[in-house]
Length: 329
Length: 252
Image (cartoon, rainbow over all chains, first blue to last red; front, side, top):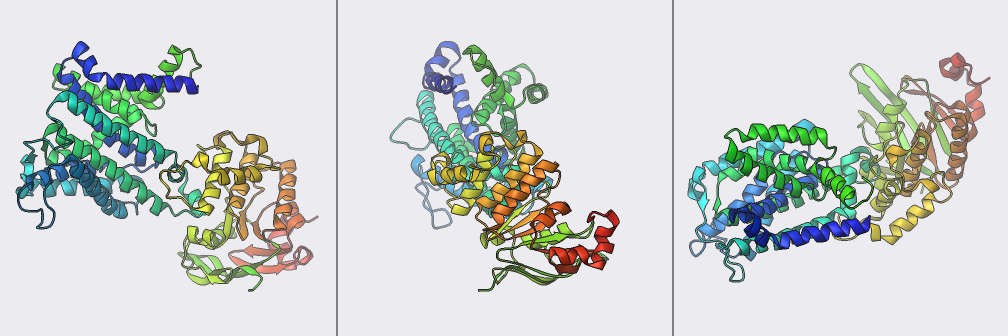
């Protein structure tokens, strides 16, 4: 069992490392950009999965944190070499400054939204997170200083150890590095003492309270961590697209992230990656075939949810077990 | 320090026109099993929920170890020494027996906000889980998920999870409910052993078990405590016989 898992991980890592070469040989050169976007989206989806899948908090407002990450990069870029932001914070064009700033902002906004919305649960929680995210969306639409609806165009990508972040291959390896670091941290968090508390909260809050653990505090902590992850993804996305706009904050982005999580497998470690990959590849492929690609995506989503118990992860795990001769899980 | 681990004075809870808890005064002292009995609808669950902090009373006060906890929630009361079991088992169903107990041990020991430790590597937690499981009926079932346990096993796990919190006293809400005769008798033995160290307030329908265990019994009818006394006193109390026991003739 362990052996097969290690083999699978090694194979996966090899594919990721060889991606630029694979894409050049078998795909088109734009496919590598798509692969980078998949990794970035999977960070956002995995962050949502931390609260949704592991913690049982169904947030429909994660676009807020994703978008805040994007705006952190955009606003710092706009002030780079000019007036400081709010007269206090100097602008920056360094990835090692903008990424932590984006995570901090994502976490802070998550703390604010979480502190209020976690007083509710169930449908109310879904609606309140959605409402807060939409408030931010409309705020940035009307914020003419930073482009309003048009957003901020980032003409020069962030500096990162003198690397050329316009080059697709370089971008891929930089994104891959951040992705690996993120996944490693996430892995540790899930196996930690806090991870166990979080999983407990999803299953039975009443029992957790009877153990002496106040649900609100622990759920808020997870929500903030999740916001930081989504902020990181937003900042990487802004660098990838060299653009940030209210579009990143729109509620459909929240729904996209949730779709990725469900498609890939709720509460699984690699589910969000598979979900993000499937979603973006289908979007690109179906989008090239028909204008109504969302209809077909909906059908596929339905088939996956109904046909595989546990999303694409369960499907892949089953195939992998069959391939390597082990028993099906 | 007084001998009272739990002290309830003049507790009142009204739901609209219904007085579900009517000036209840009772206490739990060190070394005793205090049983709370009463017919269906007497307000036992409502009372238990107020004692553990899930429901706020309209009047009166609850003290744990002499400290007023009336305004505190469940986790704070647990921190002060309360441990409870649920009538309808309430466990972490996707986790194993050992993981359920481990989480309760961890909750007590602290470090619940740690992000980068390994729970599997916390030896002191797992050692405690092992010693709790040892000698219990679940010793061979440590790796089984709760969803795969029988009803009787879940009841036992409820108790182990409560004990993992090293409580100063236990609130047991019908620990025998749904158990077969022999399972019930086993549970009586287990509770007897635990009671040597941990006092308990026992809400129970199984009269045989109550009479076998209790050092004191209080009878709750329509939200009021109509009598408190020893097993013998309660057996012979005319009002109790009429209100509760007489109808079912369970004493004979």
